[in-house]
Length: 141
Image 1 (spheres, rainbow, N blue to C red):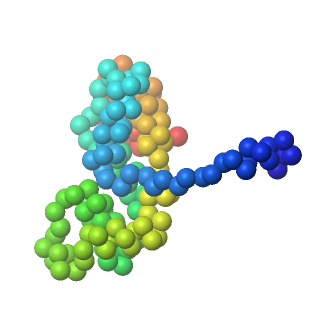
Image 2: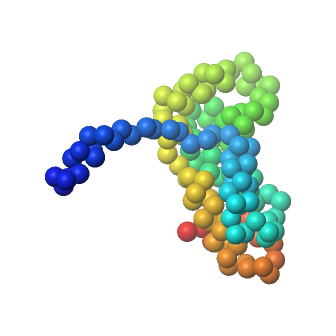
């Protein structure tokens, strides 16, 4: 550490904020970011943003003893109804508390990374057509 940065380091306090864990909200974030970008007039296939949002959320979830299926866990976090056999097994509050204890949402793919993959797909496509999910996957930075 450099001597001249000591005063600055004494005044810096990290604040750890977890990433979003709801797929619908993540999709809204991506839509908002695209609307503010230079690509707002280009066309996206219907499920590109939903797929990208779900991919981002799945990367942030941690395995659970209560709900070992991460895709199902993502759907429950998103507010989708519980499967009948899971209603007796666990409470969503317990599932969230277990995830919080394991640091769920503190790591994973950021919305910025997802947006850069989508914008790279837009750049490769140009104004020639519709950006599909495979374009985003193949164009990830």
